[in-house]
Amino acid sequence: MSAKAPDPRPLPSDAELKILRELWVHGASTVREIHDRVSKEWPVGYTTVLKLLQRMLEKGLVGRREEGRAHVYRAAVSAQRTRRRIARELLERAFGGSIQGLIEAALPRGRARAEELDEIRRMLGRMEE
Image (cartoon, rainbow, N blue to C red; front, side):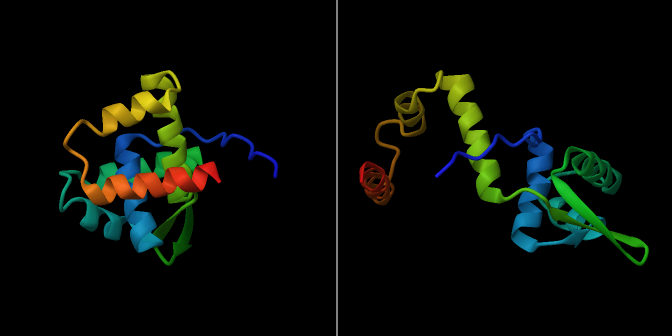
């Protein structure tokens, strides 16, 4: 199996990631729909959401189609691939590529639930196979 070519699109900013999460959960949406959902937890104006979506369209993070007078946006990048790219960048930038360092930072002593540790052990077992 060949490795996939690196994604040439830039990683989303924190604000763009908030919008992408909405599109991943709710699917294609108008600017108004996106704004109505994100503004419940993030004090952001309609025009800011519109500008972010326009910038995301230029970056290739979203696609857009017209429905009457409204523009409907959809995620052009998958949640899984985006999360992996962000995790790889964090791993390299903050931990010099050390998975052990990342895990030690992510799981401080006494903070992980037994179920989480069991799932991590299962994941490691699958990786060793």
